[in-house]
Each structure stands twice: as structure tokens, then as C-alpha cells.
Length: 282
Image (cartoon, rainbow, N blue to C red; front, top):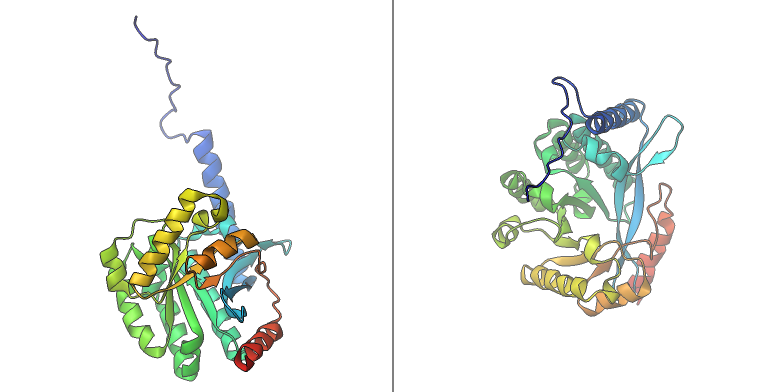
């Protein structure tokens, strides 16, 4: 029997499909919102603790997540705008804002360490580089407390530039974390060349890991790879005590997620200082 083929409606030349038009319109709105937030200094960092997996279980450091405020003052998380801006110059401007705020926080609070997310595309962005160089020159101790997080997919876009900037900044004490590890297609040879100080297991393998044998196997493999390359291991998106206990049992060094605290624009740094005092006294 002959199969009947349903004719698909053709879109006239020069016209977008309704879906493409809606997506493009949404992206334009997002770009306009981010641009306005940058111009009006309405960017913030939200800080989340990254906890030691073993005693004394204090905050090893914090991660600063970029946020923007919309016209009503509502805080917009990165997942709602980053996909639209990451390939745009606005993405580089957001990285500059995140770095500037992070460096300012480190200068004001010498008791903390702080991780800041960045795109590998920003490595060649002159304003970002000058901002970091000037800060390290004014206060070299900041380098020893700064961690730069680069996503696996981002790092693979320009691996040579990533390797070069790591070689330069690690001499100043700056540490580097490979974010979203396991979500991309990074080859082992790149891990050997990059010399990341830490890896962060992607959240898709962490959420519910205590009940998911497949994710348990992946998590064990990622921990083993990290240890082979002498990297510190962080697990993100830890939401239950059961998941935390399993991750600790397989050798994860630090835990991050809502189990320990949501990102907060107004953190209580005094609690971090108190935890560090307690850890030094034990």
C-alpha cells in the first residue's frame, strides 16, 4: 500500500514561523532587560556556600552567581537570561560586572574565598582582563582567595586561550574550577593540558543520586577521573541528606546546594568567619 504523505504548510519567503518569531521576540526582550540592568547598575551577586564534606563541615568558600534586577526590582536568576546573552557582548559585560563585584567583596571581606563564574569568551575581552590585572596588582592577596569557574562546554570553545590564562593567573594564586563536569565531551587529553584545580560534578548526576544506580556509577567515575588528575571534587545541586552522605562516601570533597543554603544577595559573612575560627580551633 502506498503511504499517504501529509503536505506540510509552506512558510512564505521572508516570513518567520510563529515559533521562531516568538523565540526571537523573547530573546530581544531579555537582551533589552539585561542591557538596561547593566546601564542602570542593577546587577547583583547572589552568594551560596560550598561546604566541606568532612569535619569541621564549615564553608570552604562561596560561589557568586550573577543576577539582574528587572524594571520592577525583581531578582532574575541567570538561567532566565544567560542563554540569550552568552554569545552576545552583553555576556562579556555581565562577566565584567560579576568579576568587579566579586573582587570588591574579596577586598572587603579578607576572611572569605569566592568563586566567580565566567565564560571562556571573556578571556580575550580587554575590559575583563584589565579589571582583574588591576585588582591583583593593588592587592596580590586577592588572587589566593579568588576561584574562577569555567563550564566544560565553554572551555572547549577556546582551549588554547583557557590554558594560557590559567598559566598566567595560577602564578598569582588564582584557582580554576571546571564547572558542569560530565555534561560535555571533554577529552582526557584536555584535562591533562588544562590543569584545573577542581572539578564540579554536573547537577544532573547529583540530584537523587542516592536512589539512582546509573548516576551513582557516573558520579564514581567522575570522582575517579578527578583524583587521577589531582583535582579537588565538588558536587553541586545537593538537595537531600541521603545524597550528601552517598557523595561523601565516594570521595567528594565539597558539597553545594539547597541542602546547605540557597544563593543570597545579602549573605551573613560573619557566620563564615565564625565557622573558620571554629575549624582552626579544632
